[in-house]
Length: 300
Image 1 (cartoon, rainbow, N blue to C red):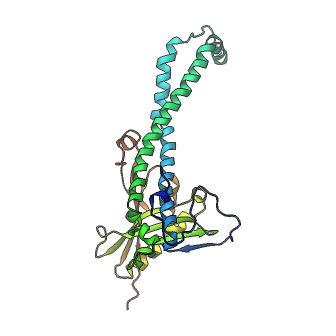
Image 2 (cartoon, rainbow, N blue to C red):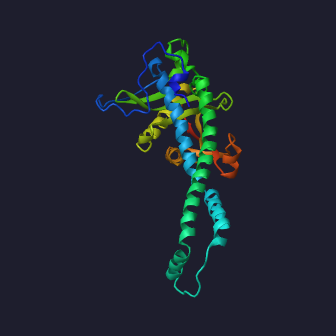
Image 3 (cartoon, helix red, strand yellow):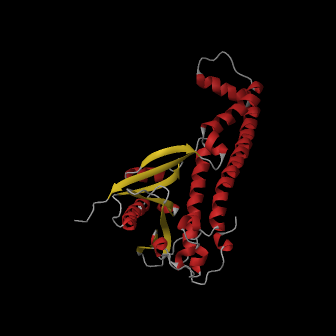
């Protein structure tokens, strides 16, 4: 896949370096701060959002490769092909001696089984990895093609060229964490006009994540805390209840544990609809998590 930068027009504003293939500059001052979405962070926001999808792809790969269906299928194929060709020893009461003589009687066959199994496992794993890649690649392509608008409610290409006007609320709905002058994490929320009612405002987390090395650092929890505070500010005390929701995949155990610690609950679990094989055969679920919190009125 072409790099994100290659698919976005050259920005007119100097972008903060967000090349995820490079380590963080250790010579930069060890400062950490947060910022809303600004023109200089447009490319970084897109790069990080794409990286979050790739992280989910990696989790899906690990889940599928160790799925009982895959492991049992490999064992079944090997058993059907090679067990009839083996010579089994008789007359041994000790299990250890039985396996030892089984090996002695079938040295050539066993080595052939090992080679065949390795080739079979490699073939199956490669095919499944391509299946998973195709699923998430379409998501990435869609986000890049639309310049991140589905996530940030702003075309990042225009933001990078400082052509955005009248979108202060959308810019403030994104929080980016910068460490050593490098963006390492972000979250973006957007109000759901469909789910919001006269009694409550509902904000949706459209993208959330951090660099893989910081997944267990607590940054995800900090970003969710920010989103809850930001929801209150967007509400401005107009409605008595606030809701914050996010859609995740069942393979993301780290994010699920963070959500639980922040009081989120899973409201629905459905099959992953972007790929019938992943959702049906392997049982990957799409989960909707949410939390509701009350706002105390300051009016007398």
